[in-house]
Image 1 (tube, rainbow, N blue to C red):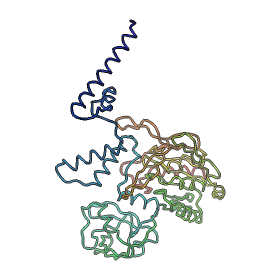
Image 2 (image 1 turned 30 degrees about the horizontal axis):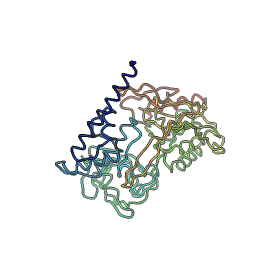
Image 3 (image 1 turned 45 degrees about the vertical axis):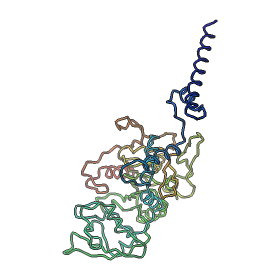
Image 4 (image 1 turned 180 degrees about the horizontal axis):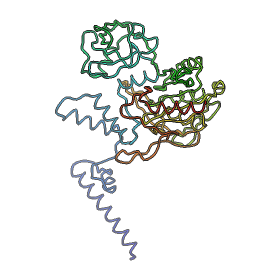
Length: 422
């Protein structure tokens, strides 16, 4: 008998023995022989195991929690934690679960509207500080101003409370009112405002003139700060840009520092204000087929003045699409620090309980074909990715964005534009 024949015979005898052993065990227990046990052993798994679908595994685990766990349980929290854990296994920081409240805020931000008073708040030791007041908002109509500090909402003190809790107290159904007690530095006594809650359009674009002919002989430079790329941003951008151009600006700074992005379509449309009928970005889904996005014709309106775009580590996604396209076509100089490097595209899928799945579905590429997707080492160090500015300038720790005295990046952008206009 050859070696191969002996080997096959021994293997066959082993399988027969296994079948007989497992079959006799099941028969002795008064059960029909279970072939899946043999399959499990041959696959290197303990007898009694079988492949389950994810839903079956979750149902089994939850049933054991219900039957045996000592202590209270929250079904929604268990479910959301399970989904979040599943998504974390994808090792994609941009594929996440948005729980109902976070999902609601995300949708409001993308839609560019919410019910409230129309003020952007930040933390302060005395309460909640007003950073900005939106145009034509209930807050602006009653006279609330930037740097006002809200110390009470109705009669409840604000100091030391979580900012999100304060915001939730200020918000409420449209048509109802909220009473705010405010500390204003130049006021002798605390001020009280009764503000009616209304549908408010989020102000994502802020325009201002930075220097003019009467300012040390410098030429007029405008600045547009873009906070996010929402559904309403284009109308705001066009309005603010038209206002600056009516004042005779000779150059423009577009500030997308700290802008996390938003709608890809908004970035493509905004680029069309400066780039006529150009490829702004291309996108590849997992099937590998590219989809190309062009800027529309006829929106640039012959603009020829120089542009500088401010970027930093907080500039991501749609901000990078705009900045990258402006750079690739040499329509703008990029000033600041390397951008974040978010070269992926997400889609949002709603769940029945109000939560949402935010899923990465594609990678996007700049007009020159570059992918800016960041790569990190295991310790979190950024190895590559993002957009490197043409002029690298780091702001100091005490710098305030938009403050000409401390914002070195803004000053560098203005100096570059003025050098082109001399």
